[in-house]
Figure 1 (tube, one colour):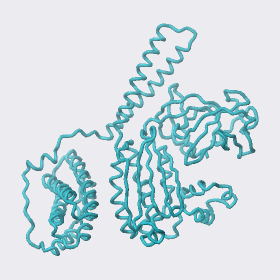
Figure 2 (cartoon, rainbow, N blue to C red; figure 1 turned 45 degrees about the horizontal axis):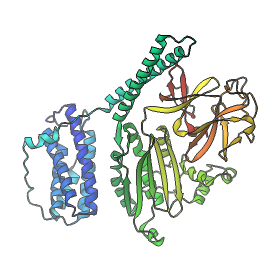
Figure 3 (cartoon, rainbow, N blue to C red; figure 1 turned 135 degrees about the horizontal axis):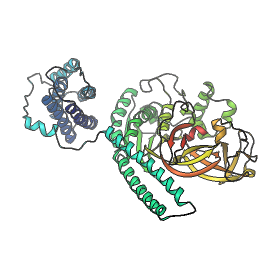
Figure 4 (cartoon, rainbow, N blue to C red; figure 1 turned 90 degrees about the vertical axis):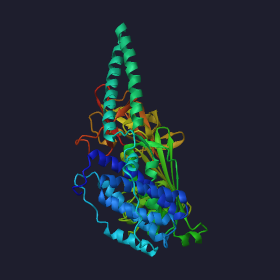
Amino acid sequence: MSELIKITPDMKRQFRSETTEHLNNLEKMLMIIEKNHENQDALHSAFRSIHSIKGNSTYLDIKDINHLSHDLEDLMDNLRSGQVLNYEDVIGLLFQGLDLLKDMNRRITDEEYAESDISEIQSKIQMAKSLAGNESAEKKREESVSELLPDMFRQEIMVDVETIDKFMNQVSELAIAKNVLNYLAEMIISGDQVSERSEELGKVSANINKISNNLQIDVMHLRLVKINTLFERLPRIVRDLSQKSEKKIELFLEGGETEIDCKTIEQMVDPLVHLIRNSVDHGIETPAERVKQGKSESGLIKVIASEEAHYAVIEVMDDGRGIDHNTIRQKALKKSFISEKELISMTENEIINLIFMPGFSTRSKTTAVSGRGVGLDIVKNNIGTLNGSVSIDCDQDIGTRIKLKIPVFMSVTDVLITETAGRKYAFPFSSILKSIKVKTKQIHGRGTRQFILFNGTVIFIKHLGKILGIRKKGINYDLRQKNISSENKISDEELYVIIMTAEDRTWGVVVDNILKRDNILIKPLERYFAGIRELSGAALLGDGSIALVIDPIKTL
């Protein structure tokens, strides 16, 4: 940045925030203009956005952004006045300029800002203006400082995400203290002699519990943002992919008002973009293929968001060719992802879910859309880190639907606290269908293929101790035998079974004891436990003990 540009870090951040809004609006308007050159509202809105960027950069003396926005403003003026010979080329230039401005704006808060070389695009813009008969001197527009200031320094309340995170951590600590107080209160109240003081302690505990819960809910709502902030990126992505793949694609968005944690939004970008790419590359057919099949030339991709209880659901659907089960089978065998014996016993749904295995791809060659041919495992892994789930449904030659389910709130998780081999384990309630007690005589099968009947359905079960590889004297993991664990709190003839469900699959996990339902703050695992794939985190409970959090899908 030149020495003339002397602005404070706060002014840089304010400029970047405001410019981001203008660039997002410009991108949306260009998407509309590309389809309808005569949409005056979109033309004027796009012009105002680029005009505001130019004005703000003039006041702060940000030269490269100012010069490029000035040239783009002239081009936009030609576009809205109808002085353009080739709309397609001009729209392409405006998108190119938009991307350059985005890059500049991203870097504007760098301590050492390096100005961009914009000579190439300036030459292209000048050529476009010349072809339209506009070689004459550019129109001079003068704006007074009074016109620029209201837009640059409009009054608004902005809360830094880092501040909210600190606030959230404090509230979480309060929640832990609340749990400790509740525990002490329970110990005193459950004693043989219930004194007046213990009753008062119970009341205080109940009051703190109420205040803490309300404060926690309010703070968590501070972090919520509309999914529309994520959806706004998709039209441009689909447009670019459509051009690269030479396919005609329409995008339908719904449910942008659904809210989700701001940190989740950031981590949802890659999975969602990957699913869009997958729909374009593998799902949507070429116009000729679609017409031959009796479909419209343009393929349709729908992205619909909704809320189910405390979960946000995002569905990505396309009306393309769907998934060929035979192709999945052949690829899985060819790449040795699975044996032929295993494949025979698999259901159609289990076969489809093989596409989420690391390295699985039906593409033999990379394309401009698929890139390096990275499989859908990136989607499953990213959603898994958010304690979410992925499911898929498809019909060949009709289309594919992939459903993502993610917790709305990321800081506190609703769990079932259990005990196995003397240690506490927490199961996320989002993956629990039901917890039941079964008698050993109700267990069928042998070895690793033991099962129970639940609502008329065969449910394969396995002991958590065996899943985690826990070895302890006196423990026998043959579920049909008595005295499975000395820790069993029911009897030597009954077992606790947690019926789990995720990714359209249902199974059972046997534990020694079920303690209670609780809301916990999940912390990252220490290095000692980090290598255990079935664990996703740890939490401090009210009695001071540690509970290890189970990753449900890894217990399959």
